Image (cartoon, rainbow, N blue to C red; front, top):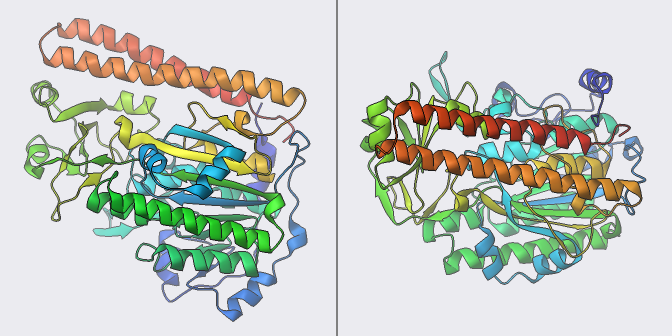
Length: 497
């Protein structure tokens, strides 16, 4: 049973509230790339004129679905995304604010990101609930083959509905400071984001809280990711950046408290991807000579590797794995914008860059994909640990907390084990969440079996016919797990939501 029926979704797609539109001097370019629409504000700063318009929004339009199953339903959400930190670095850093939130809520030390583990696809998956193969946003820069030009942040190519678009018909206002990926947001900060420090971004977020109080505020900080690239994910400089993020989070929470909104606030803190220390680099020619396009820790082969090239690459000690199309489908990563094969390097290795880096990400290795995640505040249980949750689970869980419709293309589940529910909903949610987690772990185990099988084939330990038969059997199990995961996800949804 689905959260939103097809009839409701059709009605939602036809809704066009048409509030107003503010465009900066790049408005035409933003429209071309699909950043925003007629219900979107694209703004550089909170000027007095813009504040006046924001205040004119009809606060009485907020009409979320009933959430009696929650003991205390939130009206506001603060979603803090820290780009590119590892669970290990977060545990080592001095973070009293995060520690207090975790004690009063639930946390996951090893949540899973999406593949590829880079910023653009990860942010998009988090804000749509869709895997990369579904939303199709593979990389922050994509080539326009017809115009022969490079498009930066081509959100118009996203093939999935965002939470902002899904929530708007129910009057849930959304603001995004620091990210360009929340298409349809009522307030979208579009300039100076990547170069700004914690203080500037925090000040803009506090201004939004003081002057407007959006129901959902998404704030993105990139400094820890930059420090990880330059100094390494576990370096003192990176830990200092995480400590500063903790202090800025305290400022944001105080801003909500000053407005007496903290009792109706749910807080989410997570990273988009992890990061591995880089010890060695590989020349681009290593991948290019094999017919692949290298970037960071992966290389895409548009036509696929022949048998001889495949075996040579898998025997190279620097190569971790080579994914074929059907394996990417099991990961939810395959789409028409991928190649036939994706090569990923072992931890510690990356393809060379003009400027030496000490940390990088992008692969599906454990340290690349594992991310920290914590939930706290209204509607959240206290003092619990989440098991195998995913980045794509955030969209559906926030939807049920705020009373918004789940995005059309959502593939994540509701994290029932994180919610402070009551009655039968609580019992059903816990039991079936455990089933889903078991299936997810079985899928990961199948992918590890495939990797070992490929190494045996490359090493000449088995005939090709034997390899093909075993590979088909493992893939069948993995696909059955994915199908069962989808069925469990539907069982975890609420029919009348």
